Length: 271
Ligand code: ADP
Image (cartoon, rainbow, N blue to C red; front, side, top):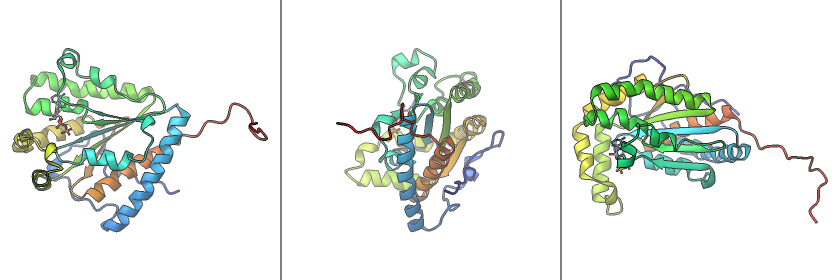
């Protein structure tokens, strides 16, 4: 089994980030869609096997954080990548506008309750990064409050890593042009209209503000224990392949194993 390259789209700690200069149209692994889809199929099968082992072993934990602009492909990534895993061992959480109860606590309170336990894969569809992105762009708290959160997030993620959680964070990076196309498809297709909201158009008007907020969050919160990957997202097939490669490559390194039976089972026959 070859080692998969885990560094291609990974940010380095301390590296300045300007998302407007990072490609949204990826070609690092393949520029051939058929070859990419074939590789993806094999990776998704392999991922399902690693997940069964992780669950059976019951020792390690994997947290996958997904962030993107609206229509950036978070839902589709979750569906295609985890669709063949065992639902008992994968927990997906979507973080929405905080409730009154959530707002009555610190911003990490609702997040910490959802981190994966032993043997589990936790997938965050949006996350605590909303608290340094939408909260900043919409001026929901003063700058001194959101700015302090970078360090609070790094400390929190360090706690998770120190207590046995492998953390992978993916920013699915689409262009403004691609977002326009996706929004229009949602508007024009009755089976997708439920996904469209006028609030999405308001956010689109603040595109540059979001890019600045994301760029700073990704730069400040890329640590050795919890790296960010910026995944080119304009082509779905490339985005899926790039995410699957990182997940499978990481699980290969985690190398979970089926536990040995309590006693030697050779010759045991059930009557
Ligand atoms: P999605 O777009 O992820 O499919 P929704 O359309 O329900 O789901 O959007 C969820 C909304 O909740 C997003 O607009 C997001 O910015 C917002 N949100 C999530 N977390 C927070 C937060 N901590 N503070 C303010 N808004 C948040």
